[in-house]
Image 1 (cartoon, rainbow, N blue to C red):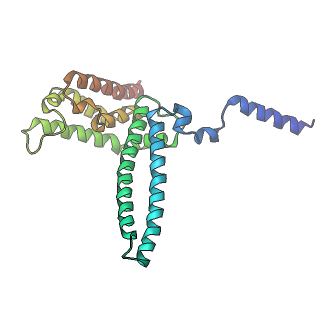
Image 2: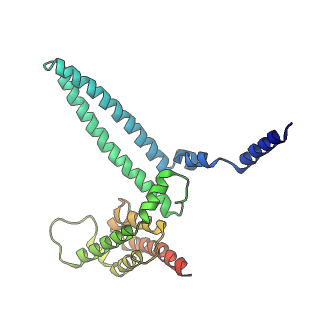
Image 3: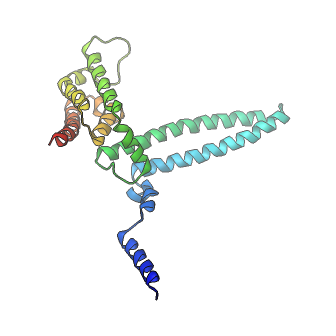
Length: 230
């Protein structure tokens, strides 16, 4: 056996021992890394299915549209309307699936798993760390505090004004930490979920649960600042 061949065999054995290649890790899916039951894997599968279905309906509608041009008074017009209705329903479902996918990624990052080799996770993590993102979140917290401090005008909000007023000081601390020179992706991700997720205690009537959630959020945000100066 030649020296070159021996080196090639040795290199392949070494790479196999190191595990999956960098390309394989980059091409991994949420199902590969987290299992099919994970919310992100389910959301990705749902999104893919809806895109395939929407593409199929669009293709069918294009053929039906051509048929309508040739026979405007036939049954094709009704089929075209039906295709439009189905496409609208698929579009709404796709919006909801995309939101569920985003929330699942935010939850992963908030749990400290933002370094997973998934392109969708990496992209969202980069966006969270852009300087303007924490500032926008801080302004949203400030606006919420101002809104509950003044008399109610218009329709009732989605949150309990009394519950939110009871944690005003804690919310002020959140806004301050979001404006700190150093923030972590997990803290910003949790702040996004805190302000926007349907399951957030911000939109419930349990003040103690809300206070505990704010405590976890301030801990994450404060830890990043402490590490930066430590």
